[in-house]
Amino acid sequence: MQSLKMGIIYHVQAIKAGLTLGTFSSNQLIHLYSRHGLIQEAQKLFDEMSHRNVYSWNAIISTHIKAHNLKRARQLFDTASYRDLVTYNSLLSGYTSTDGYEASALELFNEMQSLDDGIRIDEVTLTAMLNLTAKMEVVSYGRQLHSFMVKTANDLSGFAVSSLIDMYSKCGCFPEAWRIFSGYRGVVDLVSKNAMVAACCREGKLDMAVNLFWTEPELNDAVSWNTMIAGYAQNGFAEEALNLFVRMAENGFRWNDHTFASFLSACSDLRNFKLGKEVHAWVLKNGMSSNPFISSGIVDVYCKCGIMSYANSVYATIGIENSFSITSLILGHASQGNLVEARRLFDSLAEKSMVVCTALFSGYLKSQQFEVIFKLLSEVREKELIVPDALILVSVLSACAVQAALDPGKQIHAYILRNNIEVDKKLSTALVDMYSKSGNITHAEKIFKSVFNRDIILYNVILAGYAHHGCETKAIQIFKELLERGLRPNAITF
Image 1 (cartoon, rainbow, N blue to C red):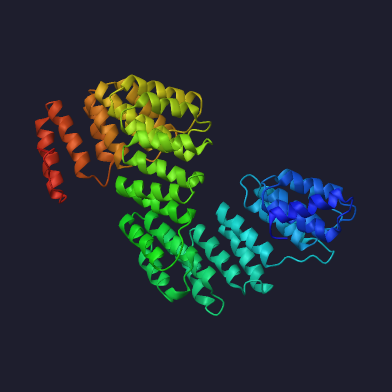
Image 2: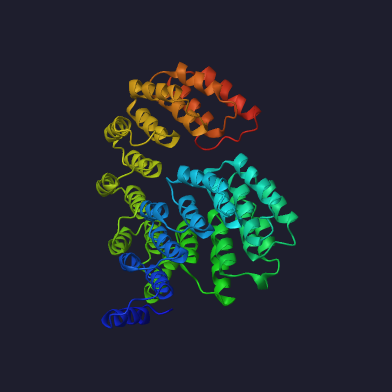
């Protein structure tokens, strides 16, 4: 049964005629209802079955897994009269692909290894565990799985090779991923080629990705094109992403939600309002506006372009709370100086990310609302919303510098030292600037000298400090030092 309408008609007619559906027909209907998201109907039909076989149990367990109801799936699994390898693999795949169920996946996998009823781990089992390993980035466990796959000859398909490539790549072992790809030439198929292209993009090796993508281009599918477009967009090559987007259509491939997600990311990076608007029109025309990921991408484009009225309008049509869209709106409103709306949206988020906090701090700094910055930092720390990172602390230190607020600045410095926060160039410069403008040039000088790779920005800050405090001799010495280091003075230096 392929058609939902025909399936429902068949089911209703059987009920009206007082007929009891056979096991085979019931199993087919459960699959049909599951495919169309009719979970309650599938469960009701299963409950009414007088005779169930292993396919019945697999069908209903799979139904709840697809609906992301893993607790109910586990209950059914535990009470199932029949189980086979498909039953175990279905639940395992559900666990490995869902956040928060990593321990359950490991427990079930260990259970499968000790079964003595003829059920044996296969390629599907192992690739599911490789996906979990990639997500958790535990390469040592991934290597154990790889060895087991080789010993049991479960590494001889393109699907297995692609999972190994993905695992090693996501665990930061790109050379091993490439060795897998190169060493399994007889097994490599389009799936594993796409996985290798994605790995190259993830590693920032765009030349390798492009060469691989254009090797036997006639074999490329929509996934290949989407992977390469996403690779360009993620690595900051927005123009190349847009060009490939056009070529994809010219080569006869239909754009889908994955294509648009990458394409819209490129539009955002280019701040291309005209192109974003054209894509928005195409999305509306083709009935894809109900997709929250695409709509969120459009919101982000309008926010990056500073067209907040359009962004708000699109967000209002999404219908569900979407943290990505809200984050884009907060960033957009903060950059435009509309901090009341930015704060309202910030407060509406159940979980505050580092990105939105940084955006809010930067917005308050740009509009010189220094007291609000100090209050927000206290709130963030007291409520433990996030652990402030270097970018947030730079904003706070900048506020301290403008206000010449030495005590709050010293507290921030102590916080940095106490929490072992890495002091990068931006943070070092902010600390030097804060101490200098707050009247403590000695401490500013001490931090300046602790920085090994000093750039012209840091030199300019300490020179301004020396000038402000009347330290002409030291200023001349530092100026000579920057020249000796081969740095070029700029307008700010003078």
